[in-house]
Length: 204
Image (cartoon, one colour):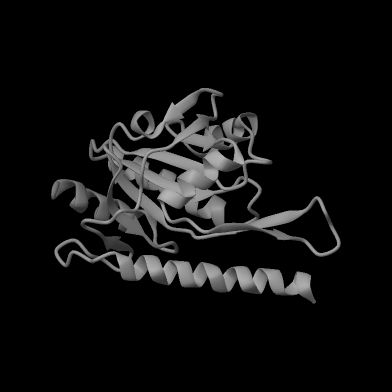
């Protein structure tokens, strides 16, 4: 019974954290759409140092050297993360058609399995410009805390090796200097997000 309660408890915590993030950011009416939170003065985001899928240590200043879409997930995710990451990649391509350069960034919340080698396959499959990041447990925790990302392991009953990672699923539009420009909800098409990103960047 205790094992069965873990996913439920994790989902409740994720919901509470998502609500806390929602209440901590202020919509900007001129830019807001159903897909996003447009935020001003938020303290979400911050410096980090992680390991890229190329094996190199890299800082947030090097990663976010231009507008970037940042998503926290994991490559072993059976459903949600691949969809969200593909939407992010499609968004980047749609923006590129308008000569708007936005970098896709994937940060794992499962560093035990998401090695640089594993992430290199994932990044290559998703988008040629994608930067995929991992690190030690402490590295990932620091980055997740800076972005207020909740995550925790949900063990599969009866198995020590199999597990899922519960985590919040926002996509963050970041500007250089670790500035949060907008947060996007999931389940919206790339066309909607690309249009919103274009408006936000035009207002900068």
